[in-house]
Amino acid sequence: MKTGLSAKRKFIVLICLSILALIGKAQTNLALYHSKDQISSPSVNPAFLTDQKKFTFSIFPLSGMSVGYNDQLAVKSMLKDFLAGSLDTAALKSVFNSLIKEDLFFQRFETSLISFGYNSAIGSFNFQINEIEQIRTSLKGNITEFMTKPAIQTVALNQPQVFNADMVHYREYSLGYAREIIKNKLSVGVRAKIYFGKASLVPEVPIEITQKNNSYYFGTSGPIKTSIPVKFVLDKDTIITGATPSKSLSVRNYLFNKQNMGAGIDLGFSYQINSKIELSASVVDLGQINWNSNLNTIKLKGQYEILPKYALPPKSGNNFIAKSDSFLINDGDFNQLFKSKIDSTSSYSTKIPTSFYAGLQYQIDPLLQIGVVDRFIWSKGMSQNSISLTANYAVNKKFTLISGYSSIGKSYYNIPFAVIYNWSGGQSFMGTDNLLLFLMPQKSDYAGISFGTCFYLFRPKVKYKQSEYLPFYKEKKHNTVN
Image (cartoon, rainbow, N blue to C red; front, side, top):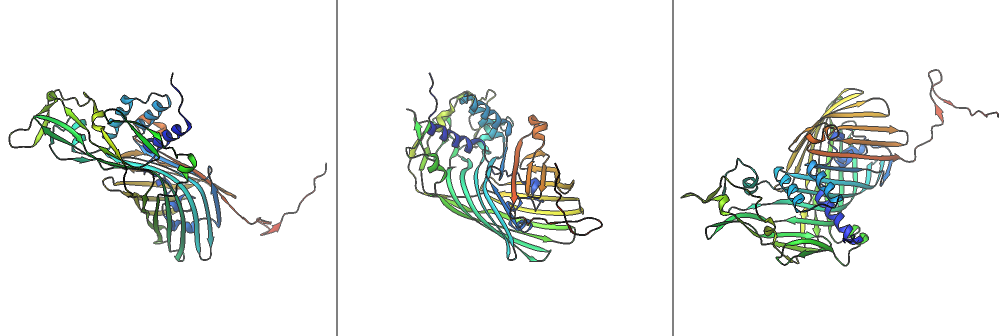
Protein backbone atom coordinates (compact mmCIF):
# COMPACT_ATOMS: atom_id res chain seq x y z
CA MET A 1 0.00 0.00 0.00
CA LYS A 2 1.32 3.46 -0.89
CA THR A 3 1.73 5.91 1.92
CA GLY A 4 1.01 9.61 1.65
CA LEU A 5 3.75 12.15 1.25
CA SER A 6 5.07 13.86 4.36
CA ALA A 7 4.48 17.58 4.76
CA LYS A 8 8.09 18.35 3.85
CA ARG A 9 7.99 16.09 0.82
CA LYS A 10 4.75 17.68 -0.38
CA PHE A 11 6.39 21.09 -0.01
CA ILE A 12 9.37 19.98 -2.11
CA VAL A 13 7.04 18.60 -4.77
CA LEU A 14 5.23 21.94 -4.88
CA ILE A 15 8.55 23.80 -5.22
CA CYS A 16 9.66 21.59 -8.11
CA LEU A 17 6.24 21.72 -9.74
CA SER A 18 6.24 25.49 -9.52
CA ILE A 19 9.69 25.69 -11.06
CA LEU A 20 8.93 23.16 -13.78
CA ALA A 21 5.31 23.89 -14.65
CA LEU A 22 3.74 27.12 -13.46
CA ILE A 23 6.32 29.81 -14.11
CA GLY A 24 8.05 31.92 -16.85
CA LYS A 25 9.14 35.27 -18.13
CA ALA A 26 5.93 35.86 -20.06
CA GLN A 27 4.44 38.74 -18.13
CA THR A 28 0.75 39.06 -18.81
CA ASN A 29 0.78 42.85 -18.81
CA LEU A 30 1.28 43.80 -22.45
CA ALA A 31 -2.46 44.51 -22.75
CA LEU A 32 -2.28 46.90 -19.78
CA TYR A 33 0.90 48.77 -20.73
CA HIS A 34 -0.85 51.89 -22.07
CA SER A 35 -3.21 52.22 -19.07
CA LYS A 36 -0.82 54.41 -17.06
CA ASP A 37 -3.27 54.98 -14.19
CA GLN A 38 -3.78 51.23 -13.85
CA ILE A 39 -2.25 49.92 -10.63
CA SER A 40 0.24 47.45 -12.15
CA SER A 41 1.52 49.57 -15.05
CA PRO A 42 4.45 51.11 -13.05
CA SER A 43 5.92 47.60 -12.80
CA VAL A 44 6.78 47.81 -16.53
CA ASN A 45 7.70 51.51 -16.57
CA PRO A 46 8.47 53.35 -13.30
CA ALA A 47 7.77 56.72 -14.98
CA PHE A 48 4.05 55.79 -14.94
CA LEU A 49 4.05 56.30 -11.15
CA THR A 50 3.24 59.98 -11.73
CA ASP A 51 -0.30 58.91 -12.77
CA GLN A 52 -1.13 57.03 -9.55
CA LYS A 53 -3.55 58.40 -6.94
CA LYS A 54 -2.21 60.28 -3.90
CA PHE A 55 -2.38 57.27 -1.54
CA THR A 56 -2.69 53.72 -2.89
CA PHE A 57 -2.53 50.48 -0.92
CA SER A 58 -2.96 46.79 -1.71
CA ILE A 59 -2.15 43.57 0.11
CA PHE A 60 -2.17 39.86 -0.68
CA PRO A 61 -4.37 38.15 -1.83
CA LEU A 62 -6.25 41.14 -3.31
CA SER A 63 -3.06 42.87 -4.46
CA GLY A 64 -2.83 40.79 -7.60
CA MET A 65 -1.35 37.86 -9.42
CA SER A 66 0.07 37.28 -12.89
CA VAL A 67 0.78 33.95 -14.54
CA GLY A 68 1.81 33.23 -18.13
CA TYR A 69 3.30 30.33 -20.06
CA ASN A 70 3.45 28.91 -23.57
CA ASP A 71 2.94 25.30 -24.69
CA GLN A 72 -0.09 25.40 -22.43
CA LEU A 73 -1.57 22.08 -23.60
CA ALA A 74 1.56 20.17 -22.52
CA VAL A 75 1.64 21.98 -19.17
CA LYS A 76 -2.06 21.32 -18.60
CA SER A 77 -1.55 17.64 -19.41
CA MET A 78 1.36 17.36 -16.97
CA LEU A 79 -0.62 19.02 -14.18
CA LYS A 80 -3.58 16.73 -14.83
CA ASP A 81 -1.35 13.63 -14.64
CA PHE A 82 0.35 14.93 -11.50
CA LEU A 83 -2.93 15.59 -9.67
CA ALA A 84 -4.19 12.14 -10.72
CA GLY A 85 -0.99 10.54 -9.43
CA SER A 86 -0.01 9.17 -12.85
CA LEU A 87 2.97 11.34 -13.80
CA ASP A 88 5.14 8.48 -15.08
CA THR A 89 8.12 8.24 -17.45
CA ALA A 90 5.89 8.13 -20.54
CA ALA A 91 4.11 11.34 -19.48
CA LEU A 92 7.40 13.12 -18.82
CA LYS A 93 8.77 11.96 -22.20
CA SER A 94 5.66 13.38 -23.89
CA VAL A 95 6.23 16.74 -22.18
CA PHE A 96 9.93 16.66 -23.13
CA ASN A 97 9.09 16.01 -26.79
CA SER A 98 6.62 18.88 -26.73
CA LEU A 99 9.23 21.23 -25.28
CA ILE A 100 11.70 20.31 -28.01
CA LYS A 101 9.19 21.50 -30.60
CA GLU A 102 9.15 24.96 -28.97
CA ASP A 103 12.04 27.25 -29.92
CA LEU A 104 11.76 28.73 -26.45
CA PHE A 105 9.68 27.50 -23.51
CA PHE A 106 8.90 30.29 -21.05
CA GLN A 107 6.80 30.61 -17.93
CA ARG A 108 6.38 33.14 -15.14
CA PHE A 109 4.32 33.35 -11.96
CA GLU A 110 4.25 36.59 -10.01
CA THR A 111 2.18 37.69 -7.05
CA SER A 112 2.21 40.99 -5.19
CA LEU A 113 2.38 40.63 -1.40
CA ILE A 114 2.07 44.32 -0.57
CA SER A 115 2.15 47.66 -2.38
CA PHE A 116 1.97 51.22 -1.09
CA GLY A 117 2.10 54.39 -3.21
CA TYR A 118 2.26 58.11 -2.39
CA ASN A 119 2.23 61.17 -4.63
CA SER A 120 3.71 64.40 -3.28
CA ALA A 121 5.08 67.74 -4.42
CA ILE A 122 8.60 66.29 -4.67
CA GLY A 123 7.59 63.23 -6.71
CA SER A 124 5.78 59.89 -6.70
CA PHE A 125 6.87 56.99 -4.50
CA ASN A 126 5.94 53.31 -4.45
CA PHE A 127 7.06 50.41 -2.27
CA GLN A 128 6.39 46.79 -3.30
CA ILE A 129 7.10 43.24 -2.17
CA ASN A 130 6.65 40.62 -4.90
CA GLU A 131 7.09 36.86 -5.05
CA ILE A 132 8.37 35.65 -8.44
CA GLU A 133 9.04 32.25 -10.01
CA GLN A 134 10.14 31.80 -13.58
CA ILE A 135 11.69 29.38 -16.04
CA ARG A 136 13.14 29.80 -19.52
CA THR A 137 14.57 26.96 -21.53
CA SER A 138 15.54 26.42 -25.15
CA LEU A 139 16.15 22.88 -26.41
CA LYS A 140 16.60 23.99 -30.01
CA GLY A 141 19.82 22.86 -31.65
CA ASN A 142 21.47 20.63 -34.23
CA ILE A 143 21.11 17.41 -32.22
CA THR A 144 17.52 17.84 -30.97
CA GLU A 145 16.43 18.79 -34.50
CA PHE A 146 18.13 15.64 -35.83
CA MET A 147 16.25 13.63 -33.19
CA THR A 148 12.78 15.10 -33.75
CA LYS A 149 12.48 16.57 -37.27
CA PRO A 150 12.12 14.13 -40.20
CA ALA A 151 13.45 16.77 -42.61
CA ILE A 152 16.80 16.90 -40.78
CA GLN A 153 18.62 13.83 -42.09
CA THR A 154 22.22 14.43 -40.97
CA VAL A 155 24.10 15.71 -37.96
CA ALA A 156 27.76 16.50 -37.37
CA LEU A 157 29.88 14.40 -35.03
CA ASN A 158 31.74 15.95 -32.09
CA GLN A 159 29.83 19.26 -32.26
CA PRO A 160 28.11 19.76 -28.88
CA GLN A 161 24.76 21.43 -28.40
CA VAL A 162 24.34 23.27 -25.09
CA PHE A 163 20.94 23.25 -23.41
CA ASN A 164 20.06 26.81 -22.39
CA ALA A 165 17.90 27.07 -19.28
CA ASP A 166 17.40 29.18 -16.20
CA MET A 167 14.95 28.38 -13.40
CA VAL A 168 14.60 30.64 -10.37
CA HIS A 169 12.33 31.54 -7.44
CA TYR A 170 12.95 34.76 -5.52
CA ARG A 171 11.37 37.52 -3.47
CA GLU A 172 11.70 41.13 -4.60
CA TYR A 173 11.66 44.25 -2.41
CA SER A 174 11.55 47.47 -4.42
CA LEU A 175 11.20 51.23 -4.02
CA GLY A 176 10.13 53.27 -7.03
CA TYR A 177 10.38 57.01 -7.59
CA ALA A 178 9.12 59.13 -10.50
CA ARG A 179 8.89 62.84 -11.20
CA GLU A 180 7.52 65.11 -13.89
CA ILE A 181 10.58 66.93 -15.24
CA ILE A 182 8.77 69.08 -17.81
CA LYS A 183 5.17 69.83 -16.86
CA ASN A 184 2.68 67.88 -18.99
CA LYS A 185 5.58 66.80 -21.18
CA LEU A 186 8.31 64.59 -19.70
CA SER A 187 8.28 62.18 -16.75
CA VAL A 188 11.13 59.91 -15.64
CA GLY A 189 11.23 57.10 -13.11
CA VAL A 190 13.57 54.67 -11.37
CA ARG A 191 12.99 51.61 -9.19
CA ALA A 192 15.68 50.10 -6.95
CA LYS A 193 15.32 46.40 -6.17
CA ILE A 194 16.69 43.94 -3.62
CA TYR A 195 16.33 40.23 -4.44
CA PHE A 196 16.35 37.29 -2.01
CA GLY A 197 16.71 33.99 -3.85
CA LYS A 198 14.82 30.87 -2.72
CA ALA A 199 15.70 28.28 -5.37
CA SER A 200 17.81 28.13 -8.52
CA LEU A 201 18.72 25.56 -11.17
CA VAL A 202 21.19 26.42 -13.94
CA PRO A 203 22.19 23.70 -16.46
CA GLU A 204 25.48 24.04 -18.31
CA VAL A 205 25.23 20.68 -20.04
CA PRO A 206 26.33 20.00 -23.63
CA ILE A 207 25.08 16.97 -25.55
CA GLU A 208 26.97 15.61 -28.55
CA ILE A 209 27.22 12.59 -30.83
CA THR A 210 30.53 10.76 -30.81
CA GLN A 211 31.97 7.69 -32.52
CA LYS A 212 33.74 4.84 -30.73
CA ASN A 213 34.65 1.43 -32.22
CA ASN A 214 32.33 1.92 -35.21
CA SER A 215 29.41 2.73 -32.88
CA TYR A 216 27.70 6.08 -32.33
CA TYR A 217 26.63 7.55 -29.00
CA PHE A 218 24.66 10.44 -27.56
CA GLY A 219 26.68 11.76 -24.65
CA THR A 220 26.14 14.33 -21.89
CA SER A 221 28.88 15.80 -19.75
CA GLY A 222 28.61 18.95 -17.73
CA PRO A 223 27.32 20.52 -14.51
CA ILE A 224 23.85 21.52 -13.39
CA LYS A 225 24.30 24.10 -10.64
CA THR A 226 21.53 24.10 -8.04
CA SER A 227 20.54 26.01 -4.94
CA ILE A 228 17.57 23.95 -3.71
CA PRO A 229 16.95 22.61 -0.16
CA VAL A 230 16.85 18.96 -1.25
CA LYS A 231 19.06 15.88 -1.34
CA PHE A 232 19.10 14.12 -4.72
CA VAL A 233 18.59 10.35 -4.75
CA LEU A 234 20.63 8.15 -7.13
CA ASP A 235 19.96 4.51 -7.97
CA LYS A 236 22.63 1.82 -8.37
CA ASP A 237 23.32 3.07 -11.93
CA THR A 238 23.88 6.62 -10.61
CA ILE A 239 20.70 7.86 -12.32
CA ILE A 240 18.70 10.49 -10.40
CA THR A 241 15.40 8.95 -9.31
CA GLY A 242 14.10 11.72 -7.06
CA ALA A 243 14.85 14.11 -4.24
CA THR A 244 14.23 14.25 -0.51
CA PRO A 245 13.94 17.42 1.59
CA SER A 246 16.99 18.52 3.53
CA LYS A 247 16.85 18.09 7.31
CA SER A 248 16.84 21.82 7.90
CA LEU A 249 13.96 22.51 5.50
CA SER A 250 10.82 24.20 6.74
CA VAL A 251 8.29 26.42 5.03
CA ARG A 252 9.48 29.39 7.09
CA ASN A 253 13.18 28.78 6.38
CA TYR A 254 12.51 28.41 2.67
CA LEU A 255 10.29 31.46 2.21
CA PHE A 256 12.41 33.77 4.38
CA ASN A 257 15.85 32.60 3.27
CA LYS A 258 18.07 35.71 3.08
CA GLN A 259 21.38 34.06 2.25
CA ASN A 260 21.01 34.45 -1.54
CA MET A 261 20.97 38.19 -2.09
CA GLY A 262 20.98 40.28 -5.24
CA ALA A 263 20.17 43.74 -6.53
CA GLY A 264 18.62 45.29 -9.62
CA ILE A 265 17.19 48.46 -11.09
CA ASP A 266 14.38 49.62 -13.43
CA LEU A 267 14.54 52.81 -15.50
CA GLY A 268 11.87 54.48 -17.60
CA PHE A 269 10.46 57.67 -19.15
CA SER A 270 7.33 58.93 -20.89
CA TYR A 271 7.30 61.90 -23.26
CA GLN A 272 4.22 63.72 -24.58
CA ILE A 273 5.15 64.58 -28.17
CA ASN A 274 1.95 66.58 -28.69
CA SER A 275 -1.60 66.64 -27.35
CA LYS A 276 -2.39 63.25 -28.93
CA ILE A 277 0.86 61.25 -29.16
CA GLU A 278 2.95 59.90 -26.29
CA LEU A 279 6.24 57.99 -26.46
CA SER A 280 7.51 55.81 -23.60
CA ALA A 281 10.33 53.33 -22.95
CA SER A 282 11.82 51.41 -20.03
CA VAL A 283 14.30 48.74 -18.97
CA VAL A 284 13.15 46.33 -16.24
CA ASP A 285 15.16 43.93 -14.03
CA LEU A 286 18.71 44.97 -14.77
CA GLY A 287 20.33 42.89 -12.03
CA GLN A 288 21.53 39.55 -10.65
CA ILE A 289 21.31 37.18 -7.65
CA ASN A 290 24.27 35.64 -5.81
CA TRP A 291 23.61 32.06 -4.62
CA ASN A 292 25.31 30.92 -1.40
CA SER A 293 23.03 28.36 0.32
CA ASN A 294 21.87 24.77 -0.35
CA LEU A 295 24.49 24.45 -3.09
CA ASN A 296 24.92 21.24 -5.09
CA THR A 297 26.20 20.39 -8.54
CA ILE A 298 24.78 17.56 -10.63
CA LYS A 299 27.61 16.41 -12.91
CA LEU A 300 26.16 14.48 -15.83
CA LYS A 301 28.25 11.71 -17.38
CA GLY A 302 25.71 9.75 -19.43
CA GLN A 303 25.98 7.90 -22.71
CA TYR A 304 23.36 6.28 -24.94
CA GLU A 305 24.11 4.17 -28.00
CA ILE A 306 22.31 4.80 -31.28
CA LEU A 307 21.48 1.32 -32.51
CA PRO A 308 23.40 0.43 -35.71
CA LYS A 309 20.20 -0.13 -37.71
CA TYR A 310 19.21 3.52 -37.14
CA ALA A 311 22.44 5.30 -38.18
CA LEU A 312 24.34 5.46 -41.43
CA PRO A 313 28.10 6.00 -41.11
CA PRO A 314 29.81 9.11 -42.55
CA LYS A 315 30.63 9.11 -46.22
CA SER A 316 34.23 9.33 -47.23
CA GLY A 317 35.64 12.76 -46.51
CA ASN A 318 32.88 14.10 -44.25
CA ASN A 319 32.09 13.99 -40.56
CA PHE A 320 28.29 13.56 -40.59
CA ILE A 321 26.10 10.57 -39.77
CA ALA A 322 22.70 10.17 -41.38
CA LYS A 323 19.41 8.57 -40.41
CA SER A 324 18.54 5.18 -41.81
CA ASP A 325 15.06 4.52 -43.20
CA SER A 326 14.10 2.80 -39.93
CA PHE A 327 15.33 5.62 -37.69
CA LEU A 328 13.40 5.62 -34.38
CA ILE A 329 14.90 7.65 -31.59
CA ASN A 330 12.45 6.45 -28.91
CA ASP A 331 13.68 2.85 -29.13
CA GLY A 332 15.99 2.78 -26.14
CA ASP A 333 16.58 3.81 -22.56
CA PHE A 334 17.25 7.55 -22.54
CA ASN A 335 17.72 7.46 -18.77
CA GLN A 336 21.31 6.44 -19.49
CA LEU A 337 21.97 10.04 -20.53
CA PHE A 338 21.29 11.16 -16.96
CA LYS A 339 23.92 9.21 -15.08
CA SER A 340 25.22 11.66 -12.54
CA LYS A 341 27.55 12.47 -9.73
CA ILE A 342 26.38 14.82 -6.98
CA ASP A 343 29.02 17.18 -5.67
CA SER A 344 29.12 20.34 -3.61
CA THR A 345 29.74 23.57 -5.47
CA SER A 346 30.99 27.04 -4.74
CA SER A 347 28.71 30.07 -4.83
CA TYR A 348 27.55 31.33 -8.22
CA SER A 349 25.57 34.21 -9.71
CA THR A 350 22.65 34.36 -12.14
CA LYS A 351 21.39 37.36 -14.08
CA ILE A 352 17.67 38.18 -14.08
CA PRO A 353 16.28 38.18 -17.65
CA THR A 354 16.09 41.87 -18.57
CA SER A 355 13.04 43.32 -20.36
CA PHE A 356 13.12 46.34 -22.67
CA TYR A 357 9.83 48.12 -23.45
CA ALA A 358 9.07 50.75 -26.11
CA GLY A 359 5.54 52.12 -26.54
CA LEU A 360 3.67 54.65 -28.67
CA GLN A 361 0.16 55.82 -27.81
CA TYR A 362 -2.33 57.88 -29.84
CA GLN A 363 -5.39 59.57 -28.30
CA ILE A 364 -8.17 59.45 -30.91
CA ASP A 365 -10.75 61.19 -28.68
CA PRO A 366 -11.36 61.53 -24.92
CA LEU A 367 -12.85 58.04 -24.75
CA LEU A 368 -10.66 56.07 -27.17
CA GLN A 369 -6.92 55.60 -27.50
CA ILE A 370 -4.79 53.12 -29.41
CA GLY A 371 -1.26 52.04 -28.67
CA VAL A 372 1.54 49.72 -29.71
CA VAL A 373 4.21 48.29 -27.41
CA ASP A 374 7.24 46.15 -28.15
CA ARG A 375 8.91 44.05 -25.45
CA PHE A 376 12.32 42.45 -25.92
CA ILE A 377 13.51 40.06 -23.20
CA TRP A 378 17.25 39.56 -23.16
CA SER A 379 18.63 36.31 -21.77
CA LYS A 380 21.75 34.53 -23.00
CA GLY A 381 20.72 32.06 -25.70
CA MET A 382 17.01 32.58 -24.90
CA SER A 383 16.10 36.12 -25.99
CA GLN A 384 12.58 36.79 -27.18
CA ASN A 385 10.53 39.58 -28.74
CA SER A 386 6.81 40.34 -28.37
CA ILE A 387 4.57 43.07 -29.74
CA SER A 388 1.04 44.16 -28.89
CA LEU A 389 -1.44 46.52 -30.56
CA THR A 390 -4.35 47.52 -28.32
CA ALA A 391 -7.27 49.92 -28.08
CA ASN A 392 -8.48 51.38 -24.75
CA TYR A 393 -12.14 52.42 -24.64
CA ALA A 394 -13.63 54.22 -21.63
CA VAL A 395 -17.21 52.92 -21.49
CA ASN A 396 -17.95 55.33 -18.64
CA LYS A 397 -16.19 56.80 -15.61
CA LYS A 398 -15.99 53.37 -13.98
CA PHE A 399 -15.31 50.85 -16.76
CA THR A 400 -12.50 50.71 -19.33
CA LEU A 401 -12.23 47.91 -21.89
CA ILE A 402 -8.99 46.91 -23.62
CA SER A 403 -8.51 44.59 -26.58
CA GLY A 404 -6.43 44.14 -29.72
CA TYR A 405 -3.77 41.74 -31.02
CA SER A 406 -0.51 40.36 -29.57
CA SER A 407 2.39 38.35 -30.91
CA ILE A 408 4.20 36.78 -27.94
CA GLY A 409 7.45 35.16 -28.98
CA LYS A 410 6.56 32.46 -31.52
CA SER A 411 2.91 32.51 -30.43
CA TYR A 412 1.17 34.55 -33.13
CA TYR A 413 -2.53 34.02 -32.39
CA ASN A 414 -3.35 36.02 -29.28
CA ILE A 415 -6.22 38.42 -28.59
CA PRO A 416 -5.63 40.43 -25.40
CA PHE A 417 -8.65 41.47 -23.37
CA ALA A 418 -8.82 43.37 -20.08
CA VAL A 419 -11.36 45.19 -17.92
CA ILE A 420 -10.48 47.98 -15.48
CA TYR A 421 -13.07 49.01 -12.89
CA ASN A 422 -12.66 52.25 -10.94
CA TRP A 423 -14.74 53.36 -8.00
CA SER A 424 -14.33 56.15 -5.47
CA GLY A 425 -12.35 53.99 -3.06
CA GLY A 426 -10.08 52.03 -5.38
CA GLN A 427 -9.55 50.07 -8.57
CA SER A 428 -9.80 46.45 -9.75
CA PHE A 429 -8.61 44.88 -12.98
CA MET A 430 -8.62 41.52 -14.73
CA GLY A 431 -7.06 40.69 -18.07
CA THR A 432 -5.57 38.09 -20.33
CA ASP A 433 -3.09 38.36 -23.17
CA ASN A 434 -4.92 35.60 -25.02
CA LEU A 435 -8.73 35.50 -24.99
CA LEU A 436 -8.55 32.62 -27.50
CA LEU A 437 -7.35 30.40 -24.65
CA PHE A 438 -10.93 30.34 -23.37
CA LEU A 439 -12.62 30.28 -26.79
CA MET A 440 -10.36 27.83 -28.65
CA PRO A 441 -7.99 26.19 -26.12
CA GLN A 442 -6.88 23.46 -28.54
CA LYS A 443 -5.63 26.11 -30.98
CA SER A 444 -3.88 28.30 -28.42
CA ASP A 445 -0.22 28.01 -27.52
CA TYR A 446 0.00 30.78 -24.94
CA ALA A 447 -1.90 31.12 -21.65
CA GLY A 448 -1.81 34.15 -19.38
CA ILE A 449 -4.01 35.99 -16.91
CA SER A 450 -3.59 38.95 -14.53
CA PHE A 451 -5.85 40.38 -11.83
CA GLY A 452 -5.66 42.61 -8.77
CA THR A 453 -7.23 45.30 -6.59
CA CYS A 454 -5.91 48.39 -4.81
CA PHE A 455 -7.49 50.92 -2.46
CA TYR A 456 -7.23 54.70 -2.31
CA LEU A 457 -6.47 55.70 1.28
CA PHE A 458 -7.16 58.92 3.21
CA ARG A 459 -9.68 60.27 0.71
CA PRO A 460 -11.21 63.59 1.81
CA LYS A 461 -14.92 63.46 2.55
CA VAL A 462 -17.13 65.32 0.07
CA LYS A 463 -19.23 67.77 2.09
CA TYR A 464 -20.68 69.64 -0.86
CA LYS A 465 -22.45 68.48 -3.98
CA GLN A 466 -22.86 70.16 -7.35
CA SER A 467 -26.00 70.78 -9.38
CA GLU A 468 -26.94 72.64 -12.53
CA TYR A 469 -28.59 75.57 -10.71
CA LEU A 470 -26.48 75.71 -7.54
CA PRO A 471 -22.75 75.23 -8.18
CA PHE A 472 -22.01 74.08 -4.63
CA TYR A 473 -24.31 73.38 -1.70
CA LYS A 474 -24.27 71.38 1.51
CA GLU A 475 -26.84 68.62 1.61
CA LYS A 476 -29.29 69.04 4.49
CA LYS A 477 -29.97 66.05 6.64
CA HIS A 478 -33.63 65.02 6.99
CA ASN A 479 -34.96 63.33 10.07
CA THR A 480 -37.15 60.37 9.25
CA VAL A 481 -40.50 60.09 11.02
CA ASN A 482 -41.63 56.64 12.02
